[in-house]
Length: 354
Ligand code: PLP
Ligand code: COI
Image 1 (tube, rainbow, N blue to C red):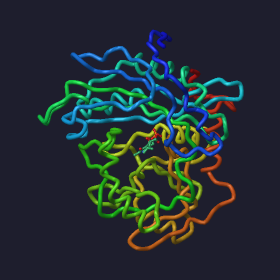
Image 2 (image 1 turned 90 degrees about the vertical axis):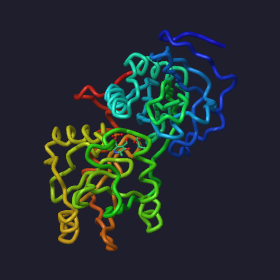
Image 3 (image 1 turned 45 degrees about the vertical axis):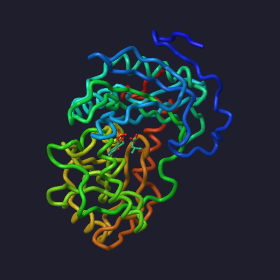
């Protein structure tokens, strides 16, 4: 069956999988809604997107994604309020960042209307998949990869832009302990660290596995040059609170410019929480942990929301961060999720109704 919404062709799935999903026990990103948005780049141009059933895709074994890793992605969430209205959070920022990543990976930039109209249409078609339970949302994964063929190590002549969605719960299931990395690097000056390139994540898996074997959940990357400064974690930006001041490192060539991070900085400033955006040395964090002035550490990201960090490891030593009764993390998490889910005013104009 085919229909048109917002000028976008929709090919409906023959049946729905929604009855197989337990919306009260959602993991992160492991079940997928009935449809996806597909948009192909061919003959030098992005072609009109379509909503199609969620299904496997066929690629030639020589497709450049397999050999040269030319791929980028985004992460977003849709929320449903108690009146069944559907909301996105700063979606144009994700669109802009997708094209920043595209440019760096020599992928043709995507037109805004294909992204926005395509996403809204997909959400209308799969609106039953957007969870309403507190702490759950529809995680949205827009991505672009090189589908064009050939072993020549050069940009492909064909790409696919796809958006698929997954009703999801929390990214981390328990307490988060992190290992401050002193050997491996996630990114380097002049590299692709600021882009959401698939390869940035593949490169983290091995050092992260080593950290997991030692009992940590994430690695905190340090600068590749000296390993003296904290940069970000594998899937989130990092904030530390020393006494009453909230500190996060500046973004750079090497760090993803997180949308949650910049929203938290603005929210904290509006709430008169002292915020500093400056380099944070590992030495400063270790000393603060030793003398008790390290009050909190947390990660911030779309998937992670705000995830408190209970302790960190550095050079074979473990440091616990004692739990406070009232934390910036829980205060800011409530502020941001209340805005995202339409439970409160949105003085910043971040919320976007679908
Ligand atoms: N840093 C990395 C490496 C990430 O993968 C993410 C997640 O998207 C973030 C930071 C947080 O970015 P955002 O808040 O835009 O989701
Ligand atoms: C997100 O937070 O949306 C991300 O893309 C992080 C990812 C590694 C789950």
